[in-house]
Image (cartoon, rainbow, N blue to C red; front, side):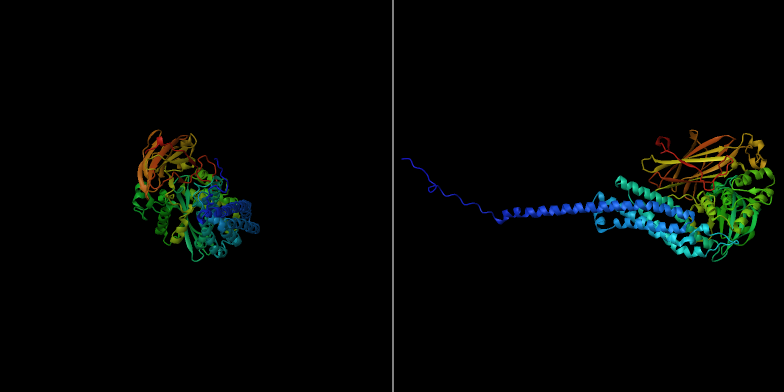
Length: 625
């Protein structure tokens, strides 16, 4: 018989499983994780917004600082110290805002994050450097006011008041140190891994600081050196050497005339003048000349005053000239100052025209032509020429000492002359010379370091005349890494041109052409060129017109030297190429220093104009490896 199962008769159902606490826990933790993630996201969003907003505001502040900086510079240039002070305060406010915005704990913490962190560090460093320049450099210098405004330090009754400069020395020294630190901090930023906008901004700031560095250093060094060198503590005697670029020497020109200048408590007087030919010569060296220098330039360096500066090392030439003076006249010489007629033309812009005893009116436009060309047509005897030079120098010196000179134009002329290496200064005081050594005024060999090769190109007349008035010079240089050792090869191309008239041999005075006395055809120009390579480097080749060019290979002060001679007839030009193998440098960066020459076309060069140095690309296939 069929039967049916009811619910009562069905087998019992198994009980529902009981979840242990271990299995329930994940369900309980999900909300916590969710809220933690939300919190992290909010924090990240807040951080991004915080850094972005503050970065934007910092950028705005730095942008606003630029016109303030321009107003500071313009006000100082016009002598408006009150306006400069107001602009300096605004500049400090803007850079201070940028520095504060980029240095809070959140910003600094995010700097530890890969990729974005280095960019934030770079921005913070740049903002801090800008604030340092504004608050610790510009503001103190502007506050010092007329005390350090060298344009306002006029000479009255033959004396300069040194007290304001002395009082400003501590503030200026601190400002110079702060500027150096700020500039170094920006220079240390590695822009290679930064975002393009950040890297570009850092590069622009670096360039601005680089351009301003010479001005800051010039001011700091002037305030540091002027009181002592002008006899604030004790009297000083200086040998003033007039270099004649119509007959070239490495540092600028033959020493044609010298004068002894006495400085005491800001008063400067011209006590004695002589022609260079009245001192020496000697049969043996008066001063110690290094053996390598004598090997390159011969024994004349230590025996003839006119040839003491055949060497491009001005401190050596100056010390030698100083010894020659004291050997002849006794006494002491505390330093040597070398200038040329181009400097004189710049000073005449400040003094205005000066009438000489001869009736000639000496102006900034005619000084170079009158002193380096016309005088030789007018006077045949060297004694008469020397007398004319002495008269011109004395007249300008007297005019400057009388006071009432345009200080702005005077300072501009002196700064320009220093930049173009037409004013060179050597001090017998070791502490002063140490300060000078880092400036263009020192006239030392160009500095070579691990990153930059220092190249020097120097000219010495070998015609024995005044034909270099017509000599045109130009230099082109470049470097490239062409060797397996990864070190650069430097190439220097030197071009000389004889721009004398075609009939120079007969139309120019014998005193100018040399008359063939030293074996040079009248009208030709013979020049000895010394090209100095980087420290620890090697001379690889000297070539012209596709072949080797005769040269004397030497070493001077640890530098390879190529010394060669070029002779040119009127209208001729020649290029000689010199190659050096760098040893210390790892990059193709280089600097080039040259003898300051005349344009070669009879025009008056600007006192601040440097000899042109063109950058060239170097093809590795054309260099010695």
